[in-house]
Structure formats: structure tokens, C-alpha cells
Length: 316
Image 1 (cartoon, rainbow, N blue to C red):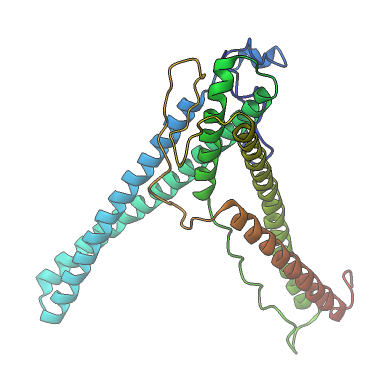
Image 2 (cartoon, rainbow, N blue to C red):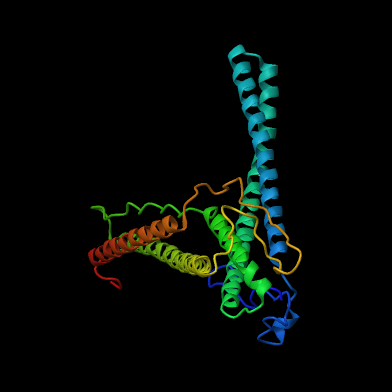
């Protein structure tokens, strides 16, 4: 018997991934088209994620070297100016310009690698969550003694990996300030309506952020429910069957219990986007952010409506 990710998108969200079962005889494709999709395994996704992480680290190291060189060139330029050494000043200035151009390219490459890493991590998280869902479904039906013995380890390892990946996700964004747009004594109807439009555009951006956050909250709450259910599964196994369950962070196993184990690397040593929040903290922070966004939208709409009223009405 073998375990495999499900044959459809793992979760709703802005990231989508179609996973095909490693053995179609276990779950079977739900449509003929799904049987033709190229198989994607969790070990492969782990490899892609690790590759993206290495790419980011290498790009960041290049940027650090250039930053150090720029600091030295800037110091040389300052010393040359202080010494009134025209030759040294020109040389240091030219070096600063050269390094500055290279730094711009390096910064853009780091930004690209960050996006690649976010996407790879998100895809791996979705796939791992889908796989854990399948393990829990299997736990309700499996009768094979070997699979029953090894299933708790797979559940534990994959829920640990999900927690690790969530901890490395982006922290909630900071909101842009509300524009300080108000009526001035000399503003005529045209200017007042222009100001109202600027406020309404800002409200639209906040609405977009709100919708994005709602989708993220749905994903996070789904993860929270999945971790709760998998925890209940392990607690029930421990209570009634008393197996020896893994303790602490272990490599994530994605191969069938009856096959050769394949270990994936543990959690990252690098928090790229900064901040290591628990799942509960992320949900709480996003819920608080949503409340603030709602208040801002209401405030902006009232201000825009007042400006249009002063202008003589929206269509005046």
C-alpha cells in the first residue's frame, strides 16, 4: 500500500497546484484529464523549494559583498575629499558609481529570488497540507497492520513540516497611511471632486488588500483546522493503541510506509521575510488588520462623500 497526495488543488487560495497520485490505483483520477497530468511528488517539491532557498541565499551574499565594497569606496571618496586629492577623488567616485550600478542589479535579483522562494514555499505548503488530508482519510479506513503502525509517524512528520513552513511565511503587511486630503478654503467644485476621487481610489486599494487578507485567513484557518484534526488523530492513537510516536522536529516523510523512506530537509535556518509568528499569532494579526482596514475604508468614504457634498453633489 502507498500514500499519495490528492488529485486536485489542495486548498483554496491564490496559489494553485494540481497533484497526481503516485499510485492512481490508490485514489484514482476523478477525471480522464487528471490521469494525464504529470506527477508531482513531495520530495520533488522539497527539492524545488531548497533550490529556491539556495538561489536566494547566493543572491543575497552577492549583494552583501557589493554593499561592503560600496562602503569602502564611499570612505575612500570622503578621505580623498578631505585630503583635497583630486586624482584619488575621481578614482573613488568612479568606483562608487560602478559598484552602485552593480548593487542595483543585485538588489533586483534578490527581489526576484524572494518571489521565487515565496512561491516555492507556498506550493510546498499546499501540497503538504493536501497530503496530510489524505493521510487522515486513510487513517479512517486502513486495515493493513504495517500501514497502521507507520501512519502516525507520517501524520506527525507532515504536520510538523506544515508548522515549519507557516512560521516562515510573510508577516502581515503594514498599511499605507490614509492620504491627508481635505477641503481647502479656495477649493472649487472641480478640485473638491478630484480630491474625493483620490480618496475613493485609496479606499479601493484598501478593499483589494482586504480581499487578499480574507483569502489568506481562509487558508490559515484551514491549516489550523488540519493541524487540530491531525493532532486529535495522534492523540487518539496514543490513547488507545499507545504506539511510539516521534518527538520533536523530524524529517518529513512522504514515501509509503512500506517503501524506502526518503527524508526531506528540516526547517529553514533563514527567515527571508522576517518575523517568526505562530499560526495563531498570524490569524490574530490578520484579523486585527482587517478591522483596521474596515475602519479606514469607512472613514475615507465619509470624507469623500463630504467633499462631494461641498462640491454640490457627485454630478453637480
